[in-house]
Amino acid sequence: MNQQPAVLKTLAVQDLVEKIRITADQYHLASLKRQLEVCESMLEETTRTIDVAILGQFKAGKSSFINSLIGKEVLPTGVTPVTTVITRLQYGETERVTVRYSDKTSSIINAGDIGDYVSESNNPSNSKKVSFVDIELPSMINYQGLRLVDTPGLGSVFEAHIKESEEWLPEVGAAILAISADRPLSADDLGLIRELLSYTPNIIILMTKADLLTSEHQQEVIDFFENTLTREIRQSFPIFQYSTRKDTERLRKMIEDNVLSGLSKDRDAEFVRILNHKCQFLLKSCISYMEIALMASLESDNERDNLKNQILNEKTGYEHIRREAYAMARDNKNQTRTVINNHLKQFKKPLIKKMTSELSHEMVSWKVNLWKMTELYKNWLKSTMEREISIISKDENEHFRGTLDSTHESLTRYLQNFRMHLESNIEKVLGLKLAQSEWKIEVPEPEKPDVKVLFGFDTHIDLLWFMIPMFIFRKLFERHFLNQIPWSVEVNISRLATQWEERINTAIDFMLKHSLKYISDEIATVEALLSGVHGNTDEIRETISQLSEHITA
Image (cartoon, rainbow, N blue to C red; front, side):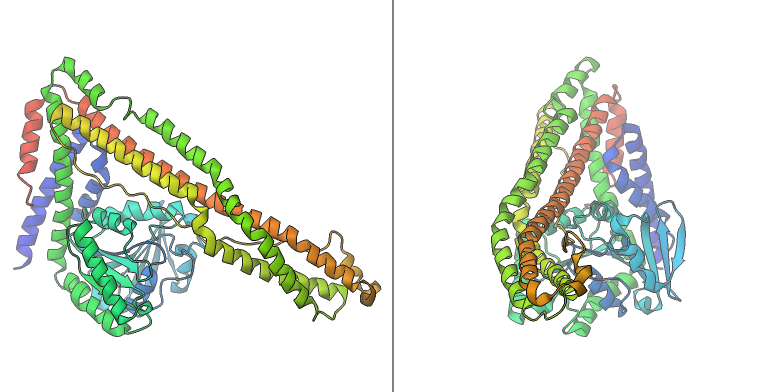
């Protein structure tokens, strides 16, 4: 009885999606391609599985939350960005892990080997070309019909991570946005929420690591979330707390009762509601583009080229924008090393002094021959240098990002100006407003650098330890080891600068590429609309009328 209306509604959506597909193909609406693919895929879905995506910046505790929720340590966690591919968990009668590759092949693996495919350390930048890892668990019997999706952190430095998450985003059925209690609600989080509104009516805010705050401070953060969301998004969202360390059972039950159980119980109705939400957004975007085509079609053939040039003039020409953007990014990248070096040079003398002092005290206890003394020195230098360089990297990384932040600011402003100019011309010439499109550039945070240390003698003199009387030469060797510290500090601070330069410039290249792709897609869509119509005003007007009949909100 309850499924009949859902079936009828799905048929109506299917008819709508087919109309949009025909329109998009006929008028070359490239910007609608990804959303169309998602809606068509959902219509073909027989099991009506709802993807519940766990999203957020990297290190927001997404994988830890899922492990805690299902009561099993399935997903790898760590102190550096871990998840490198999208991982999907759902109920199965027996435990099974399937790795699906980009070439459409798949393989079954042991649950203990999941980290070999989903973690950055074992599958760097997804070098194994994994599309998804699907995990089936009997313990998820209470979540039948739902698929929990662990995504790479959207703020990771790794381009493959961000690309995987952003390309999958339109497939979201319900979204749980994880925000760590110690890094509450950034501009990137707000941008992600705005984008999610295009894809799902179900958005839940999850404050992870709640145990870091007192009860009073927890409420302050929740109030801040609510006020900020109301002010910036003009909408309220359910907000839940979670901790894997304290009061976990109660917090888990609240999420199960108020979120997951409802989605699972009313899965068919929720599936149709989500599908309809996606299609409505797709429909409004399509109509907006068709209105541009209609106004262009109303112009005479002789005037159409003038109209195209007026809207897509040299300021919005892709080549002009591309050259300026590349020049800006190149200039910033050329300055990255200088910015880092200028900041790091203040740490050289204090670090040399500190390590020299520590080594002087340490060597007092080394009452050994030259060979053993050399080994002790090597071990001490390696561990001490790793510790000190890591501390500098962690504490000072905000000061290394000057060119990255400058690029982010410039590209954001550039895209805003581009969009503003394009919209202004379309409104001036055609009397229409282009459908709004949110653009978000992530500023990734580089991972902890790998520190390596060089040490020892220029020759293998330590191998002749049995011939060297230490009571005569000990002070000489101690001075030799102490004299190596300035050189070692210089080399490793320079190495640290190189590692950060590579990561920051990689992030700059990533932001540049995605910015230019956005501009290119927008120009291609509008250009196709303005170039591809030839007096078919009645046909376009009829298409808009037919599509408009399907608008429900």
